[in-house]
Length: 440
Image 1: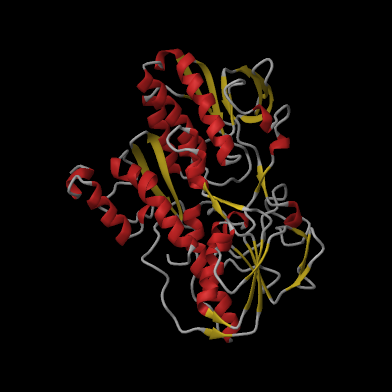
Image 2: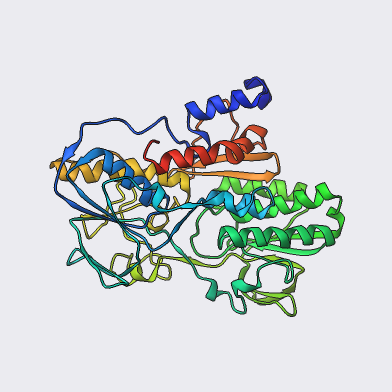
């Protein structure tokens, strides 16, 4: 049975499903209503991105009398799941931008500054402006930083069609410039280089998505024969989950996309249009006409300097040492992590944030109430893996690399489906916004 047979072949049928169920993020029907817990606890949330804004809204609804402070120096909120759509020419940069403060609940304190020092022994954060914030509980939701300096010869000023360079992870505006570079490449042809860094990273499927989209755009334009697509995988696979790796490899074979394993980008020379890769056989240098640069990704320096990071895992990246099921810090019991900053085997997607939220909420409120929390995070990660414009695979998996589909028997996770594309292109932003408001 085709995906259309399960519905009425209408947009209305799809949106009804998305509103009632999980959609691409498995975002639910709303946070459960519960009696408010009275407390005078001082709760500091570092970061007002997807995780920080959402947990602020949830805690504001659940706690009475708490002093909730959100610390973040940004002015804008970026809808990062939309960056790939912008970089493929499907959305403008404005699609992914909104006021950061507008997502935060009333009654909390918003400090529009960055953390300069974090002392978990003293339960204190000092801002870059010199303000000292003491806390009883700390929620780390800073996200990660993109280490552009780690790619030798590269600078964000190079992004755009003039140089044939894309960097769609950087910002909504640079994702739009990346589209202009991809558009020119798929018009003129040549060699296009794609790939991902060797570090952990947010949305590990995004490098594959932009490669697939570029190939589809070239095909639609009638210019596929002029374009060579090369995907450089950082490991001995194209995706960390074996069954998804095999499916991605199959699609690349079908579409004549070259893939190379254990090729990690070290440097680019924009003048010569060459890229140097580290491989098991040594460094190699290749020529390109278009290159999509995605840098190594790490914890912010203030977190790495704080003593919250793992000492024996991800030592070059600095993710915080939380229990992978409770998301509570292993050494500081009043510290929790949400989102990309967590040092866990899976979970650097917006979908993962949705599943982090009830766990952290449950354990924090249980601690305040003098009882034990019960909710556990099983590693849920979702990636609407776009394979072409109008088709995607809705892949969802857990810590054990098991597929955990939200709609078993209805949406096949490894098939390229129209309905999975609409999950990404239409329903995802609305459900993401509901999450930010604490309603999912």
